[in-house]
Each structure stands twice: as C-alpha cells, then as structure tokens.
Image 1 (cartoon, helix red, strand yellow):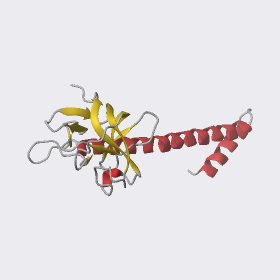
Image 2 (cartoon, rainbow, N blue to C red):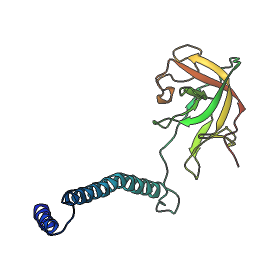
Image 3 (cartoon, rainbow, N blue to C red):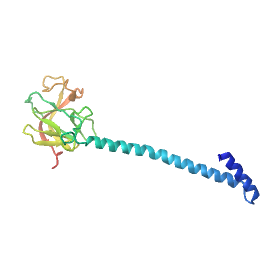
Image 4 (cartoon, one colour):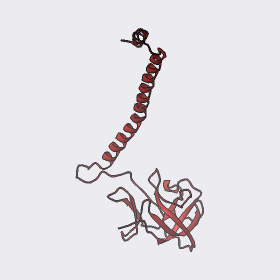
Length: 194
C-alpha cells in the first residue's frame, strides 16, 4: 500500500470515530521524521565504518609479514649527510622532534616551528626499527634518536650554496631550502627510549 492509499484509509477510519482528523497528519509526519532520522543516522555512520575499515586494512598491510617471516618494510628513510667534517666551530643549538618528511628525509621540527633540513655528520645512518620508526645511528652503530622523539644538536645554519657547506645542496633532503642546519655534535638525543 502506498502512502496516498494509507492516508485515505486512515482518513476514512478517522471519519467513523470521534477524534481529530489532523491527528492522522501528525502521525504521518512523525513517521516521516522517524524515517529521516534513521536515514541520517545511517548516512552518518557509513563513512565512519568505511574509514575504520580502511584504517584496519592499512594497519594489517603495514604489519603483514614478508615471505621470510619478518615485518614488511615501511617507507625508506634517508639522511642528508655531510661529505666531510667541515672543521668549523658552531655554537648554535637546534632542539625539537626528530621528523621524517613525506619524502623520507630525516629532519628536525622545533616546537611550534617548521621542519628544518639537517646535514648530519659523516657516516651517521638511519634505519627503521621493528616498530617502523626511523632511528638515527652514530658511526659506531649506537642508536641516538628515534622518530617523533626529542632531539637536540649543536651546529649552525649554513647557506646551502656557500663554499663552507659540507653537503650536497642538490640532495633531496636539503628540501630545497636556502639554509640547512649543519650538525657538529649531538647535545642530547633522548628520543630513543629503551
């Protein structure tokens, strides 16, 4: 029975009884409002369910073991390293969080500031740990800092095109910046908690 036929049946039934026929219209409107609320709730829940499912699939894919039983590798990371030890004396500090850019470059983000490209000392390396976070290592293989952890280094800002720059200004991790923080020494690298 369609809505119009239902309306007519209810009106004829209402005419036989002593009550307000406008009550039928109100009852029909309440029914419509109830259906609209259900549809709105369904439409509001559907995107949440879809996003949750997509996030779950992404998490499974990220942690899915490879053929040899180890975790699948996350996106690769890289450092802009100095070609030589510049032998310059710097007295500036850069403190913030160890950051990995969308391009996989390790940099430092000061609190409330923009990402600062960093030229790390020669022979420093970076790799992802079992949690998928980037970890910076010194030449002896000691873990010094972990992605999203606090880090403080000594050095100074160097014009990327200057002769004193001990790094390749065309390296992708220079991030196209005119100035790069050239690390002379670690002050504290607390981002690696054991």
